[in-house]
Length: 433
Image (cartoon, rainbow, N blue to C red; front, top):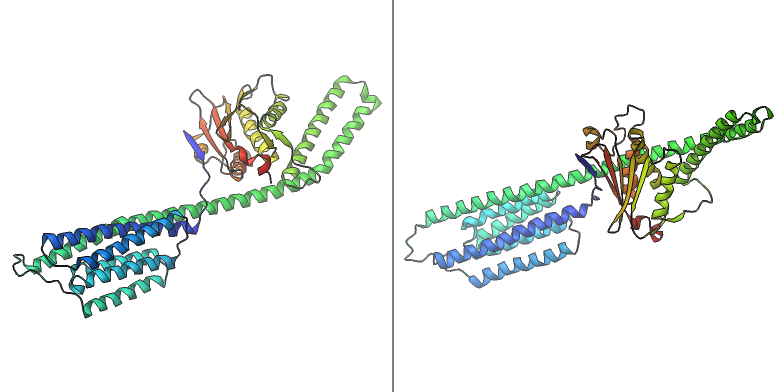
């Protein structure tokens, strides 16, 4: 079972406008095809005289507008409600012209105006839908004034009343089918819009949580600095005392205590550097291989021999700027793996295209299904400890800032694997901020 954390697309209001304009162009292409088919059936199938030149010019104008719309959509242009309303008004005008040349308001396809009203009500914010309603009423009034009548052949064997009813039925079916298709697509667009907005809100909440955690960590680091310095001085004094100098066992324990205090001071300094509070500390220029080797060596110094296996498949080395936050979150994943699998943890580094790929595998019990489902969310942990799950939460969010991603899975042969994918451009010297 795998749970992958993928960067959600940034929500842009312009995307909804482009999708809606694309819907209108699709509808217009259907209208162009339907008009050509209807003209062919009426003129050549039923033998009814029509002003073909004017009707074809109107259809050609719709096709030209559609081509221009596709060009604008492909260029990434923004489409406001005003632009969408203008496109619908153009369709209303085109339909008015075609109906005026083919019977006016008595044409059974005059009901197609209803389609434009419904689309305007769904796609546009007030007062634009009322503008479409007003334009439609004006169009119907003009069609009732002086339309070009349809002249049926004198020898036409078909009764015009059933023919009119058949045309009305075809118009009803056409409207129903188009509404189901396009309203369904509009609903999907709205769901996509809502999902994107929810993702933005979730990200904002997570980033606010990170800011609060950063302030807490920075404050704690400041508070811990003084007592750690006092402990370091006290341990140094104890080691120099004549009464304790000759006690080798006690000197060894004091040396271990001094090393632990130094380690804590280094961690505190790292927190302050990551928070941007260190003064006079320049970013460290290194390489991918040196960066990873440094992490591995730090862990190997405190683990059993062979407990951490490093498989370097990266290939040609790349110069980067070391990121303390990235080093910390990679360390969090290794810590988690060592905790459940102290005898064997494997770190594999590889290169896929322009990305660094790190696999951290252990031989522990693997992730619980609920952890995989909520991978990267804060306080999702089965350890039962306060603050559990923050390591993976920080991993996902640091990688998100760098344009990367993380996924986790349970291995078939036992244990778990966390994969980190990071664009090398995010760490390159020219990309350093």
